[in-house]
Length: 360
View 1: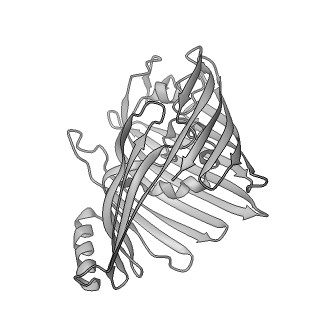
View 2: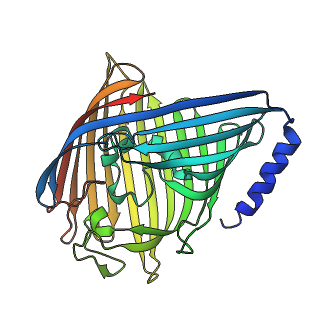
View 3: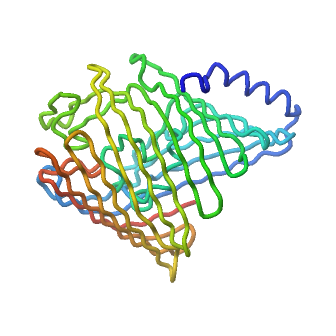
């Protein structure tokens, strides 16, 4: 994997393609402003022993962005994208993605900057992502939510038959020499109504807070002592296989991942595994429905998520929803911990929420 693609090769390739296929004068430019705004109210049954009611962005990530494409001729275009996240409830924002690159009809797309890793191709195969951010597997240690990599170079091939290939590398930056280094590749098969995607990705130097993320008592042989702020630094090797298929308008989804977590401090390893199954209906009389379940394991702990959502669609841009997610955890002194909700004081935790989403 290390020699699959390196950032030292990326710049010369981009320059060569630009010089060989593009004329000096641009022919047309297209810039688009777009985004999603989502906010809702939710009730969480147990966070550290207390009920929590809040106004929050938990169904879809809210953001705004601008993207552009300049036709360079000869089937080649210069492309860019910049996005900022925004929490509708508090107004807090931050950069999501920022990249520039070149795209060609015959050779694919090469982009450089802060951008989604290759596992973003699995998002549409994860039934939890049709429900809410809360429903994704605990801690997201397999990066199934859709995560970014800084200082990255990403290549996507054009469709070869029904297949698309991808490769990515990312370099480290800052005081932690290996933090953020990554490399990976994937292959995706897609025809109308069906997608199958397999991805291998290694990310180094990820910092995590295991008790806050998972409510787990120990990892890599280190006791967390119910300290929500205690952190570990780990390397991740993620292998994932996902698929969806449409049958009579119903979309069935499944995703399986296996992640090897390695402690940077001790070299000890843990296995994090997740299986997700579910489906959702097409819109009928303005309504669509979704159901799903996931099972996640790490060491002696296991978390089972069940989730359901009902959505009323006013238009392609605006909808309201009612969602429910519940989790049961098992293992020695293990407590539930739905994603981003904080650990429960018991083995169970439930979130019920309603909200509105607008796309532009």
